[in-house]
Length: 93
Image (cartoon, rainbow, N blue to C red; front, side, top):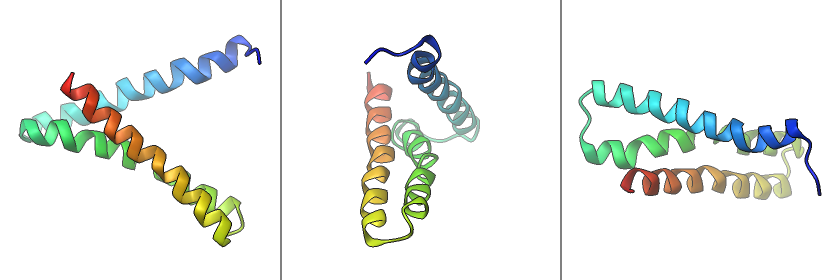
């Protein structure tokens, strides 16, 4: 499967920019708020992940609010958990 330049940018530049802008904003506010280093490492990735939880709700609504749609929504919500874990890993490195 070959992607055109626009699709390629959507898949690479969009998420990278989102990560940098959102996380740097959350980190800045958290530092100014006097949060501990531990909170910065473990808390800010959770906010980033939580910001993506709306995808699960959208998936459930689009699926007709059925049991199957709920299962897909739960699987989709795993995305934000993965983002949070990866965020912690990136903070530790």
